[in-house]
Length: 357
Image (cartoon, rainbow, N blue to C red):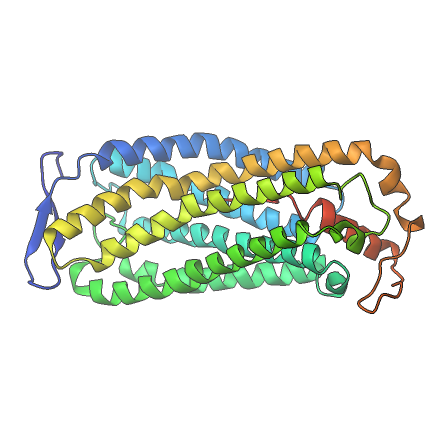
């Protein structure tokens, strides 16, 4: 297909084809995907190295972080093929089965990242809002089981992509005769793989902010912790980080899914189809950029927390000799060394951007 050719799309209401130019995507998508590949691969490779070789104690947040980074890395590895595809103006030189695999990996790892972000949000929510009651709810073993369930869900939900990806040009939709079925499938996936996790993330972080702003929050996790992790300054920094995380999540994923839904649904007028198509192409780089932003936020949050911990070594070292946390009835609750470490991790690690994207 040459750059001067019109791109044709089926008009579902009248049966004729809409034709319009999309030359801009042959520059926008290759350039943006190439940048994401170079930057994202370096950042996520560094994150993998730190997690695998520099992490001594594997907590549930570490396990979720590892899986999220794997998703981002696998997603990034599909981009060079799409760079070539769009730079060559929708000419797919590889085999049709390979097109299916690339599209499958592209969306499987995109939604895998979203679901693991949701897992991290729930884990932080429990650690911040229910630091004592959640002691028996979270563990590395359960985090591994949840991770396996997430991977199984993603692979199962994205398997139909292997059926719908049939055309030589390797579009991210399907052939015209299968488009109605594809629209139903895409809508269901968007609801269960994005909309619901998105609401969970928003609710969890909203409740976390409210909890962090409570005057007695630090004492609930560890009575006597004053002037350190429970200070007003530290809580303000944590709230700011949460706001940045939410803004990033919304900027990367929300426009992409909204414009894609419009692009798939508004096929009754060629003008609407063209507008939604342009908007969808423009927002696709934002979704890909999340793979670069995730490790950056993780490292930034980690540096701030490490600095705070360095100043409070004595407080951390003497944690087992400190006052016992109070139960729901106001009575002391005995905690083992591992449980005490978990409660502290709820404060230290629960506030980190423990990654995405």
